[in-house]
Length: 620
Image 1 (cartoon, rainbow, N blue to C red):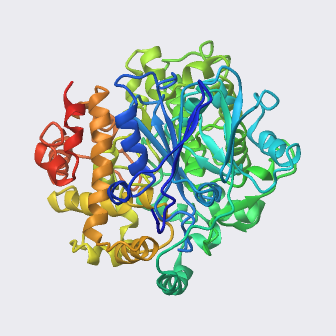
Image 2: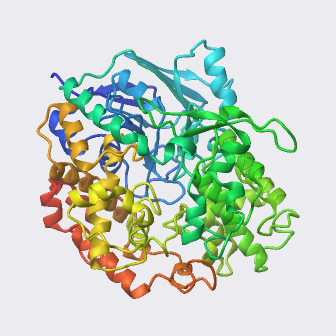
């Protein structure tokens, strides 16, 4: 079968018995699921048994580039990875940019499905048709950077791209991530712990075959359009976190575990400050002129920082900065480096530390409980000590290494009120009280609170080009929570979820019509925006069915109680999410997705999405 755009091959690797096989789905499969998340969710639902142990042999770990990943379309360097999450017990998915997914596509695969468990440390080496499971005893226990250097020097495999776990993933830290080429994190949902549970230190990939596209001239024309547009990107000078002063002014910045208030020192810890104090330049991902990744260097005491781990993104700056009332930029950069060194998620780690600090300040954790630390908001030394403890599962770090929800369950005493999480996944750092459309997405999204796949109300004017294409009302205040805001969350939300199936970066300002043209140019299929939206909905619905099968209900589609109260001071003084309005918005959102009032996909929904085969998975 001749393909345009995709390879038509899925690589399956069984670590229990060493079997390596190749599967060749038909074209309808790709039209239905596209790539990335679509392939991941179809595989997870159909192949992992209900109630499987996320850290057991039955869980699958799936790496899947998007449909456009590795093509000449600007900004197509992204790849997804998924598994049942050990942090939440729900479906887990995370994405990273860079070059790793591009290399996998060039090696000739649309996904790698990793199953079983090895009884000794191994890594997977993929070089075009040559796929081997190799011994990793020498690097088991190594930090991420050391392991990457081992691949490049000891194996003389400099051209290989690496997706690795650090010691945290090996030791079952449920906040562990997978890091590609030292700088790109598959950050969320604890998927590094899944990789560790399989005895898999890394997947190293090299490919020599550029993917073929149906219409290269059309791609060139699209790229010319983008070259005129991308120069306006706010990410070119500082990457993410350049507008933190504006975020602070309107209340988008998380302050003191999302309690609210002011953080007048914001300019000391913003991306502008990072580049001014420590910046050495910017770098980018595959085929992207925006170059939003910071490069930093810090050589002096007390915290020299290894530049191989890159610089902190907005989420990291917010996580270890205002959310913990810390304004020491070097300490924040050091926390970022420790997380990348050991391989843990900066978002969940900072949020879990904020949870512990609030418990400590309210007398629910004592100095003895926290290994003698003075765990007050703003205490830089305590924060850095706790990052290390979580990464190594030492002392109080062992309890916190399961995330804030699991920690609250262990500590008890109603500490759950200080755990800023949905379904066990800690909130990213865009305030739901301000972004009330995003608050719907945070609540319902299958992996838990996620900012990349939901519309952030406060930044929506920059998407106005798309608003008009999706025929939306335009004068929506971020704090509005109304039926039309729910429609925005649904329709613009589908557009925001699309990159997870296509492998494009949402920082590249492609509008929905251009994405349709790109899919057509790459695959040769007649594409419509409606078909793309339906493919995205198909993935969302499969995620929902997976979670329902695992025992999640509509009661899990809720925000922490904190957001139903208003801050006493600061830009959001007096502003809260109205619980009744929020409940109604969630129910309306279900209906827009074709789900019933309990959030269960209806027969009509499954029929419309060509998912009738999934009906048995809905039966308990």
